[in-house]
Length: 465
Ligand code: 5AD
Image (cartoon, rainbow, N blue to C red; front, side, top):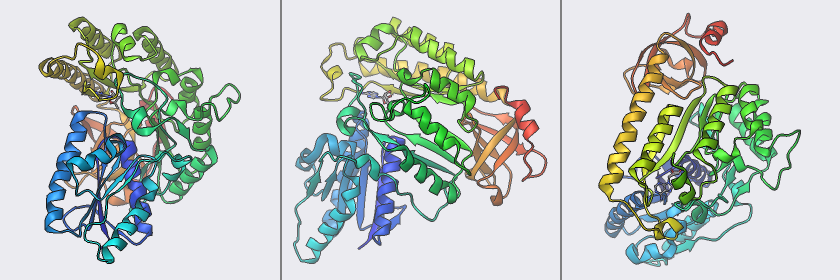
C-alpha cells in the first residue's frame, strides 16, 4: 500500500515541488514509481496558468476516479496551483478525490496520506476528503529535499515562492501567494549538498527570481540580494554552471547585467518575459515597462555579453489586441531574434482583472497569431543553431541521448547537442565540434580525446569570454 505515482503539469517550479514531495515520501518508506499502473496513491501536481492545463488535470482525475470505483483502496489527490485555486469546489465535480493540498502545504502530504491510510485500516469505507489550502509562514523553506539515488547532473533549486506583481492576465499571485524568499545560507547549503552528490549545474527557481530577497536582504556594495546570491553560488566548488528562471524585465538592473560578465559560471542565457511588444497592450496588461525600455535591457545585456542567448514568454490575443499591436510584437520578436520562446494563446482566468475586460478575441485569431510567431521562432532558432556549425561548444554531458546510442548534453546557451561517447562522460564538461544543426538540436563529435578538455578551443569559439 505504499507505492506512489506523482504526475506533474506546468512549470519547472511544479517539477521541483513534485520532486521534493517524492523525496519526503520516500523517506517515510514509500516507493516512488514512474508509471501509474501499479500505484496505490496517485497525486496530480497541477497548473492553473491556462484553462487547458486545468482541464487536462480534471480529465485525468475523472479517469482515476473511475479506476478508484473498481479499486476503492486507491488514493487520489490534487496538489499545487489548481488545488489552491479551486479548493474544495473540485469535490463537487470529483467527489472521489481524497486529498487537495495547496501550494504552501506540500510538505504535509506525508502526514495526510498516513491519516487516510490509517482511517482505511480502521475499516472506515470512505474516509472524508482532506482539503488544506492554508497559508503557512516559512513554507518556502520546505522545498529543499532532492531524490537520492539517481545522480542529477543538472538540478533545480527553489529560492523563493510567490509573486507581488499584478499582471492583469495572471492567476499566479493568487495560487502562489506573495513573495517569500529563502535565506542565502540555506540555499548555499542545498547547492553544496547537490554538488557533493555530483550535480554540476543548478537552475535557481522562483515565480519572479529577480525580486529575490527584496525588502528582507539589504543591498550590499551596490548589489541586490539576487546578485549576492549568485555570487555565493559562483564560489561553490563542483558547480560549473548557474541558470535561473523566471526573472522579470524590471529586475535587470546594472548589477545583474554586470554579473553576467563577472561570474564565469553564470550561463549567457537569459529568459526575459516580454508578453507583448505593443505599449498599449503592455499597459493594459499592467506590465511596468515599455517596448523601448525592454529593448534597452536587451541592449545592456548584449553589451555585457555580446553573444547572449534570449528566450521569452509571449501571450497572443490579449483582450483588445489588434493586428497592429500584434505586428509590434512580431517586429520586436525579430529585433531581439529570440533563440527560444514560449508562446501562449490568451486564456481568461476567472478572478483576474483581464477576465472582465471587453474584446476577448476568437480562438481562430489567437491560433493564427500563435502560428505566425511560431514560424518566426522556428526561423530564428534554426539560424542560431546553423551559426554554430563548425564551432566548438562546451557541453555539459547530461545522459544518454534518446537518439540511438549517443549521449546528449547542453551548451551554455542551452542548446541540446547529441554526440557519440561513453557513459563515463556523463557529468563532465566536454568540448564538442558541431557539424550539423536542426531547429531543435545540434549534432557533433567530441574534440580530441573523449575526456580531455581543450580550453583554448572552447575559448576561441565563444567570443564573449
Ligand atoms: N493566458 C495565457 N498565458 C498566460 N500566462 C500567464 N497567464 C496567462 C493567461 N491567462 C503565460 C505568461 C507567463 C507564462 C508563465 O504563462 O506568458 O509568463
